[in-house]
Length: 412
Ligand code: BGC
Image (cartoon, rainbow, N blue to C red; front, side):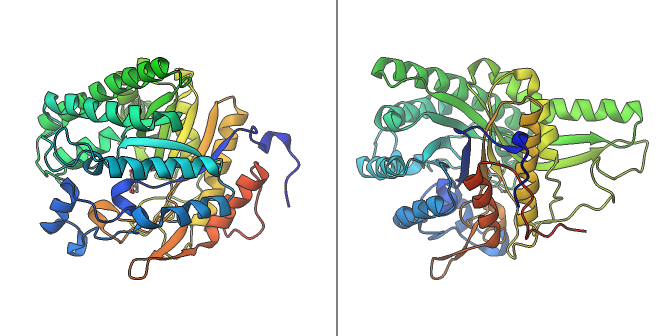
């Protein structure tokens, strides 16, 4: 039953989407991650291998977007395919991505194109080196000239803070060094790369008469909530929210047409209280995903609220859960869309919700253990099977509204 409350409706041009990234689904890549996988750094020594063989099966996967009533799709292009050797650009690979964009256009699906989603060509130096920024800009220039006419929404770089941290602080991702100074340098170069790419994309569109592009990064934002009402804890949460969220946005603030939000994490923070219960949670125990991450969908609402000060359109570019059995995902989607709806009711200009992910895929250091797909993928046969939660999202997209679906179980 649909609640007849006009505030739960979304605007007619609201973007309902799903996302993937090149290395996680395409298969057959040769980049810095494949080298890392071959050295046995991934859980159970797994390798991405053929992944979801999306490089060959994408047409059928685009049919799936339509099956779910989605009008937006976020995906990334693989630098190592476009430029397999320095300054050698591969027309066939560019052509394949062009075909993807044309095929989306035929389906009236708005693409959101990411230039860099965690992977680098093997020949590229490290992001700590300023020369890498020049290389990225050269690659961006080719991509924008070749594919720009099909794209309005761009994400330059996916989650620079996560990439810098997992690479240079944790050492889990290639090249797996542990150096905070390197993390800081890489982060600074990601910001520079974004700012230059932003300018380049806008200039190219103007020169070519392609209208106005909309460019952002996909920021990994995390919500910090204070334990109890102790002012010290409130201060700690504010400081944490600054570093986790506002710091990166601030570095590129003048070069953003919208704010791309990837949301997965909420945290309780403070010293002087044992209160671990989140604001809207009756117990201190939050449900856990298959990767043992806390699941607190309303945290998305609080995170969106942090963005009010920027006065920019906001697009949820990722939000999802590792849940092979689809135990929690129907509820997670329902409450996440509700969080967006609630933000909109309070005046936040959220222009879309893009779910991570369309397909099960290669989950970085977790290999094939984290299953985020609206469609389950059998990696032996490449068979896709729709999970029940996909229909929950499809229902919201179809009605262009939030409502309480009949069949969704809430965790107790
Ligand atoms: C990344 C994805 C990843 C997802 C789930 C995001 O931070 O952009 O590549 O699969 O989180 O971990």
